[in-house]
Length: 125
Image (tube, rainbow, N blue to C red; front, side):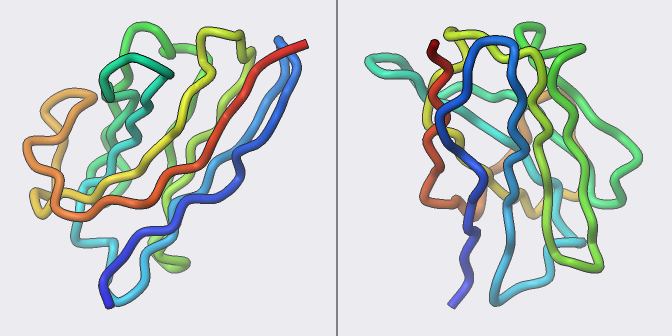
């Protein structure tokens, strides 16, 4: 079964940090570009960041640039999203997605072939 599994979400105070993980099973993630998306309550799902297959190119939405860092460990078949300086506007369900294209032209990949189930991030005091 081909799937992505996110983990690492939770409740954090404003100014805090979280690291999300996106682990692949059933396929080799290193052939894919991987992106993170988020969906806040009542809003559309939007792209947050994208990393190409070899990890040498990353892109970010303007709302998270300088605060979030995407990275990958292909040996562990996992992509990460380090989130710092979190604020309540970052509250959302975060999803990872894999694209059969091995590059990102922006912070949203050209395709999304596999999705995870999402992990909740809540930023609140």
